[in-house]
Image (cartoon, rainbow, N blue to C red; front, top):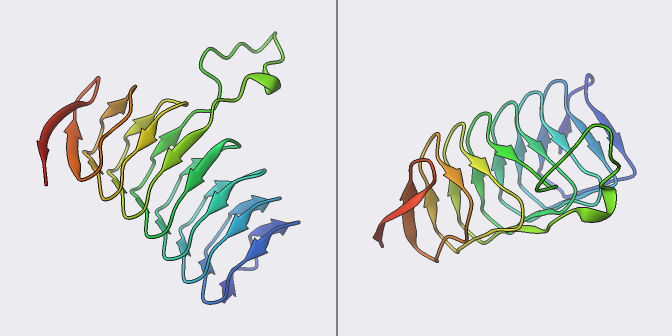
Length: 151
């Protein structure tokens, strides 16, 4: 396991063989074994990340998001956790769960709107905006993301 000295790991369980690079903040979360967490990643609280995941630079994995084993998050992937946030209204009780299943790939700069499930081995193209569930072994692209093909 490697954790860069510039990163903060608070009240978290980090699995063996996991690398956490520069300027990361992980709090009250579980990260599996043999993951690679890139620069400037924020995880938690109450996030569960499976084993073998790769999270590229500049990703924030918010409360309510679960990544199963072997998920790839490209650079600057965006997760949300409240559907209609407002600065002046506390909506902490309105977090919608988001599930990214085993082996899924989320391309660079895609946005995953809260409350969806991305299926096993599904592929979300770079820059796509996912607003509904993505089936197992499928490719979605665009804004809003639409099914292109099944594998």
